[in-house]
Each structure stands twice: as C-alpha cells, then as structure tokens.
Length: 176
Length: 176
Image (cartoon, rainbow over all chains, first blue to last red):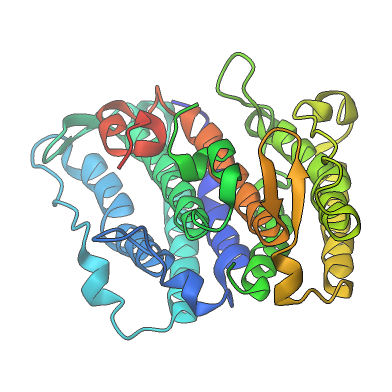
C-alpha cells in the first residue's frame, strides 16, 4: 500500500482537473463520445459522482464494520444515464466537487492505521480485497477516467490530423 | 478541419489542467515513469514546452511563408532531457503557461481564413500536410500527453490495487 497521503493527493485534485479541463468547454466536446455505447465527458463525470455517492466510502465502511461477512453492493456502471439526465454539466461538476470534498473529510476522520489498511472485505465479483486496495483503486479509477476523457476528446480529431495520426497513440490506439 | 475556436478551446486549457493536476503533487508522483526510457510528468511538461517553443507556431509560420518549398525543422523528441535538467517543476509549469498564452495570442493575430487552413507545408517525414492538420494535431498532441500523464500516474498503483487490476484499462493496457 502506498502512503495514504499519496492516494488523497490524487483524489483531492480530480475535481479541479475536471474543472480546468471541461467547464465551459464548447458543448460539442462535452457530449462527444467514441461511438456506439461509449461514454462522453458528460457521462464520465456522472459516473464519478455515482461512485463517490454509492461506491468507495460505503465500501470502506463495510470493510471496517463487517469485514468479509457480506459482499459489497454491486456497483451500477450505467447509473449516470438516468441520474444525469436533463442536468447541466456545470451542476455535475459542482456536485462532484462537493461530494469528493465531503468524502475526503470523512476518510480523514476514520484515522486509518496501517493495520486498518490490511483489513478485508468481499467484492461481489472479485472476492477478497483489502481496504488499502480499495483506496488505491479509487485513485487509479479517477486516473483511468481522466485518461478516457483525453482519449474521447482526442479521437474527435482522428480525421482532422492527416498523417500525424500515426504519431499519436491516443488516436492510433497503439500500445507503447 | 474543426472550427478553430474548438482547437484553441483545448489548447488554452492545457496549462490550467496541468496546474490543477500536478502542481505541488508529491515529488514521487512527478518523477515517476513507466520504467526504462519512458517519461515522467516532469519529462512530459518539458516536452510540451519544447513543442510550444520550437514546433507548432514556427511550423504554422513556415506554411504561411514558404509553403511546401522547404521542409519543417525536425522536432527533437528528447530535447527536454537537457533543457529541463536541474529546473524546478513549478518553473516548468510557469514557463509552459506563459509560452502557451503567447502562442495563442500570436495564432489569433494571424487572423487565419478557411483558405489559409488548407495551405500546405512539408513535414520532413510525413510529407505534405495542411495548416489545419497542424493545428488540430497541436490540440490532439496535448491530449495525447494528458492521457499519458494519467497512465503514468495510474501505473504506479498497478501492484497496489489487487484484483481490480482487471477492471482498469489504464493499468491493464487492454483496448476497449
């Protein structure tokens, strides 16, 4: 487990990163996706809200209170489609920032010890996991979706960059 | 070519995104990379500086002034290793923000028309390219490196997230 301060350093910055990147960006960027069922920045911020509301801290508390005795509630990866419907994007950014701040305050108030971070809970699909893994995953999950936002935005230019396509792995999809 | 305002909307936000994300983040995050010759956030910001200093606007001017008559200067993808050596990360963020602002001002002063965006220059490796492609690539290149930063940071947690590894494509490297 990395230091808890390293995890919270990432978690606390995500709302400001989203704000600097997406607030007042023209709407065609905010609703752009990668085709089919893929997600737009609007969908992604809704998903982050749903995670901060129902997933990360509730699961942390379940580990501390009930250990492996009962599995976490499954996480609904599509909840944002109903929950964000009709909302303004600015209100989603505001809500995420408020929720995240409250969650980090609550996390701090748990005063977690190293021993706590090794305590285990039960994921409904993945089985036994530690609290430390849950918290590291919360931060990595933020980063996963920041990477996705960069990719969704960049791919809108796939047909506009001509031969440079070969050089940009975010567009070519090539590993590297 | 997408509207020029869409390109500049992305370009003008990148310094603030980097600032919100990376300024005062603990040093172990800023110098982390993906192993071997891969780049850290420190290296990436240096690379963005070098691009804004020597690549994008100079090439735009070459297209307008000389067309395809002579190729662009090749871009040194490793210039930041010497140029950033010994610099503080905060000073790199500051320099990038200043350069980007000046470049966007200069771009605006060109008062580019649709016809200008179709004008062509010669890339030393890729051959004939348009000014519109160059400018779209500038924005997509920013996004490529924002995606890279998310990936570099997330991968520091690859060994800390346990079975969640399978769910986070930024770590698993799986396409999707």
